Image (cartoon, rainbow, N blue to C red; front, side, top):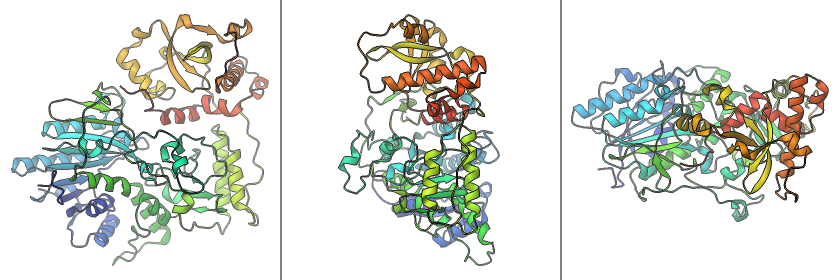
Length: 587
């Protein structure tokens, strides 16, 4: 048997796409015995890479899984649960097809040949919803429990394996008789202790993706990739998450090489872990598509594919069991609200538990973009520069500071006739829609008796509004504890430290009055973030003065415009909250 013996499994694949999950399972030593994919172009790719394997066209037409199936693998459709999709839910027209997975597993059990292992993959949007009933993972895990499966899932970022891109996916592993935690969690809680760049041997020194992402997001000469289809600031050194529609809209900005141009499908394949040309089906008999259509179709395949490195790591863990998971301090009982945790399990009769583990099962040095990418498509007709100007103007309108990015683009454009962004319109704050500034205060913070902060009046907002203003772990606390338990407390956002805490009303003083009366501690604070925090608080006070009076002079007088844009522009605030969604304290 495959569980624990290290032998190859017989794999039935549903929703196979271009075969990314199947490819890595095959590399890990397993055998693909059946595939199912509705897209005709994906089927051509499958025929090229899995010759001789029968490919079904419609999952609904499959009556039974092959009797020798030991692992069912499926990356079922995500469009109805994706945060970028229509959010119609787990039973939507596309995502609802996952019920055929349940149907086929149940039928196999009735025929006394149950499938021992199941591996599913989907987007993080499956972990959240407007209420408990709308959370997709709730229904998937309940179905597994009713069929007698142990299950575990973990959110994994592809950058964990050193690839310079952000791609978070939820991998759900279920077993009738094994412990799926051994495969997903037993390697430990891989949190970087810092200083990894000091140990690296390359020049300039590398660091793990977790440390890289903690660095400032501004472009200061680092490579990056721009998504022209979305007015969102790029992350330095990292490619954005590929979707079904954005791959052909990505632009590589490589100041380290003095290059700029369209990323191209071949480079996108490299970032996903495929060999260049993997998705090229143009030579298949009877296939006739234009070059533009071919790139669009291949880009769509990659946007829906699984990261090769992540899936291969999981595929190699399933039959080996080189580690055994031990229940410990990182496990605690789940309290379900509108968001499930990034990792959880239910094994035996122990019930549902969440795990305070990271998205990084491995800690490999992150590769630099220019070392991964091949040639980028040059701008030969001047169209790219106009697209970049439009993109920069959209960023400015949404409140982003773009000077560093513009400098990088112009650096890459040097020496090209007529190729420069030129002088863009100077940024100002006049056209931005701001969130109202709350009451500004001095409050006790850590070992310091007074620190500048802002009161978040949670009673003014419903859950949907709060989700755009504060991190999800605070909302979860509110829903589980209720406001009554905090009736004598205020929720404070601390400037400089960028953290939140519940503080007793008696430990809070008005910002202006306390400053004027010098009610701070007698000795100067030496904390490195203190003076930055005061500057941010003063800028927030100036924004509030503008909101109260409507006087544009108060808006122009703001000292730290970058902070005000990032903190009080609704778009930037929502993006920052999303990035900090799961950074709350562990259970």
